[in-house]
Length: 128
Image 1 (spheres, rainbow, N blue to C red):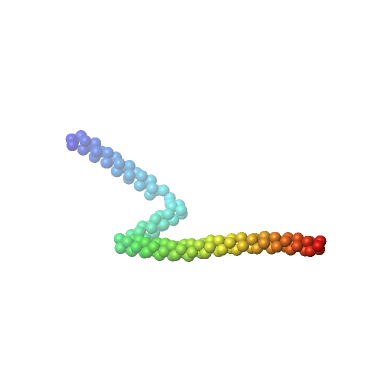
Image 2: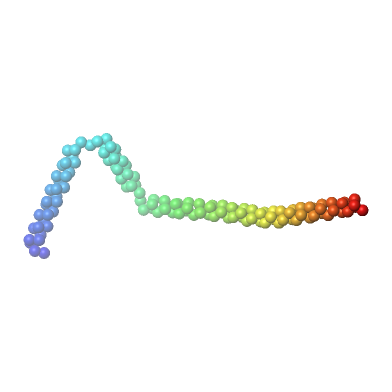
């Protein structure tokens, strides 16, 4: 690096520093509103809470979450298996009742046919 480049970068740093100082003075002279104060307090609470977190606490929380998630998935899987079993039973019941309905329809057809034959036979007996 040449000395000209160092002077330019030093001068840029000084200008940036002075700009930061001016901005901070503007902020200090500004009157804070209640929402701004509330936001500052909230931000401070967040920072305080976040500073208490350790790697162990975070890892333990993630492990607990994973265990909880696993147990929820297992419970849902069992419920789904039970519901699937009920669905199979309902499907079997539908098949059984459909066969029964067909048998009843056949019985009705046979009964009507028998009734017709009986009437015809009675008519023949009356005619003779």
